[in-house]
Length: 412
Image (tube, rainbow, N blue to C red):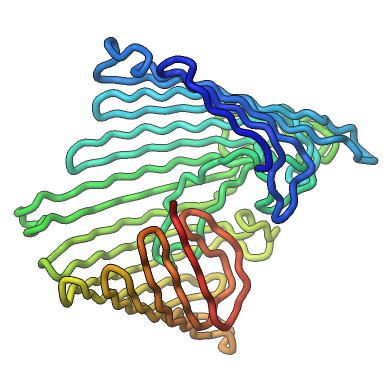
C-alpha cells in the first residue's frame, strides 16, 4: 500500500493497529482508498498473575474501502465496510481459535454485481504433545470477494485474505493441481496428523520415523433463488439465499496424502509420499464447463545421501497418474550440494501420458545456484511447462517458455 500504518500498545497486552492508503497496482495505485482499524487484547499479558498456564486472545477489526460511483447502470455503494471478531484460547497442549467476518453488500465484477451481504467463518483446533500433533480446520465463505476496486479481477487488489484449508505441497507433481480459495462461496474441512515413531523401536529404527497424514474436502455452498421472479446470481439483485449450514452439491476439491520419512544411517535418509486428489478444474480455474473434475494419484520418493561432511546428493522420483486433462507425468531430479553455498540440479518432467502424441514433451531444466546468508542466486536453462506454479504458498499461472532464467531471492 501507499499510505500510513500505525501500531500502538497503550497498555500491556492491548494492541492497536490502523492503516489508510491506496493499494499498489503494479507500478501505479488502485482507484479505491482503504481504511482499517484493529484492536486486540491478550489476557495473559494484561493479567499475568491470573493466566499462568493459559491465554485468551480477543480481537476485532474493521476495514472499509471508498470508491466513487460512476456506473451508468447500477447505483453502487461508495463506502463498503467489513467487520470481524476473533477468539483464541491457548491452554496446555490445546489451541482453539475462531473468527467470523461480515461484509456489507459490495456489487463488483467478481460477484456479477449482486447486492448480497457477505460472511465467512473459520475455526481451528490443534493438539500438540511430544511426538504427536493434530490439527482440525473448518471454513465457510459466502460472497467475500473484497477489493479496493470493484472492477478488478483475477488476483488484483484483494483487501482480505482467506486461507485455503488444504495442504501446500512442496513436490512439483503433487502441486500440479493446487487448490485456490473460492471467495464467492465454499465450505470445507481439513485434518492433519503428525506422528513420530520412537527411536529404537521396530518401526522407528535407530533414528525414528515420522508419519504425516492430511485430508481436505471442499464443496460449494447451496444457493437458492431470492424469489420466483429472479434467477440465482442475477446482476442488480440480492443474488441468492444461502443457509449457513447447507453444503452445495458440487465438490471443488479433495486431497488425501500420507508422507513417511526416515533416516536409515548417518549418511542416508529417505521420504516417500502418496497423494489421491479430486480437482474441479472448471470451478477452481474458471473454465466454465470445459474440463470437469480431474482424478489423480501421485507417488514420490525422495532420497538423500551425504557423501562428505559438506557434500550430498539428492534424487527425486515422482509420478502423476490421471486419465483426465494432460494425462500421466513422470519427473526425475538430481541435485548435488556443496555446503554451505553452492548447488547444481537437473530435472526432467515428461508428459508421457498425453493422449496427443505430438504433445508428449520433455521439460528438461538444469540449474546452478549460490546461497549466502539470506540471499539465493539461481541461474538455469531449460523448458518450462505452462500451468499453475506455487512457491511459498503463492500460486500463479505461467505460460510455457524455453530459455535462460535468473532468479534472486532475499529474506531480511
